[in-house]
Length: 50
Length: 225
View (cartoon, rainbow over the protein chains, first blue to last red):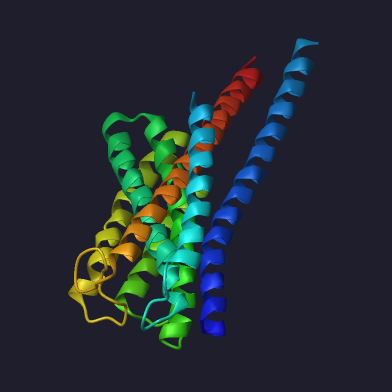
């Protein structure tokens, strides 16, 4: 098996997963922002209740 | 219920991927002309098909939004576009890596490559447009129109290798390309986990969008009090 051919095959496999992982990371960041918004909202509601 | 589906789909996709990787790396022989690099096809092509499925779902949901004005269709359209874009990026970059070995170049302004890049840019523009418009129903309407317009490029990408003389090989599914049956089977078998992953990602993104809408509604209500 040609060494360079095999290395680039690995890069080709990896890049598809890297794109998906990058998207999953962006989803996780959005989830974190949502939690922060929810916490802020809870605080706002508590302040209003007082 | 949705959570269970997501766990089930993810588990099945993981098992299938491990099995497929074993078969494609250990069991399948090297392709006669290209050697090991040809195995990129098992991710390169299914990634494109998955992206096109996502864009098609976005196209259908955009039409449904314009017909029914239900924001849920807009949310599905957005989620499917985002996930499709991630798969399209994987397709484009893995194609460049394949091209580097087989053609000796990273990129060429060939009709297939160019139309796919335009497709990616159109859908990236769709997501940028969504960020620029604040009002939800206006954003949904404009986005739906752009999504329908962008989908026109998908058949152009698909048929580009038939309509024009290109450096890109002929389609393996139907057309001048030919492959051994074991490669065929692996191509379709590896598409299954990618579809399952896409469905899970769309469901996660959809849940986030629903949560965001609820938070915005409660915030408006709290401020109105």
